[in-house]
Length: 232
Image 1: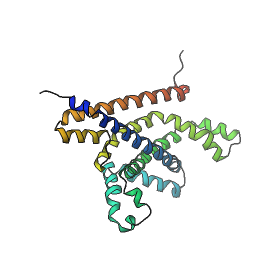
Image 2: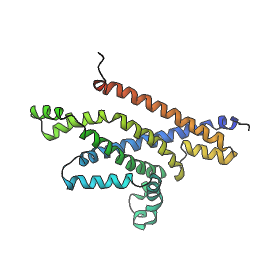
Image 3: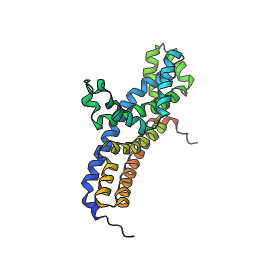
Image 4: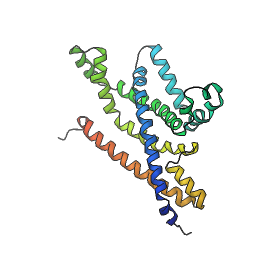
């Protein structure tokens, strides 16, 4: 078997463009997903069933259904309703980029909310007691103590979620977007070279994963240094 990477080299600009699309989708999805995950995480740790149950139901449904099904429901499913097609939201919902970002943001918000809720529940009781002793209100307690502390401790778990979302963005190619996987599918269909096309895509994902892992390691080293075991 002879592998010919000349075609891959000639189509490198297509792959680089796909990297840009992938990063764009990833960053937008993570930003909106995390913004939604924070209130959901706070709701998940509430002792009130009226507050906790809606957040639990949301995360349960989203985490319990495949990402591909969610993407199809948003991109293809909503278009069948005339009310949606005639609404002011249709210019957005008819956009593949918007639908992909929306689906990915909803998906990651559910997982991130559970990660944040777990970190909030793991907050040392001493931190809470110290804040109360200083006379902090409940709002100030969450803003200054609980949320910053929980977000720092959630970094290792959240880094895994970010990497999973990077790989999940490959589904965007199914709704016509030319991301990294979309570029590989285009090259494969044009030149009948699936191995070379997709191994190149895999290398790009591997490179991005390596960069993300290093960035999170640096973040953990900075913000989680106080949790590192002390040298004797």
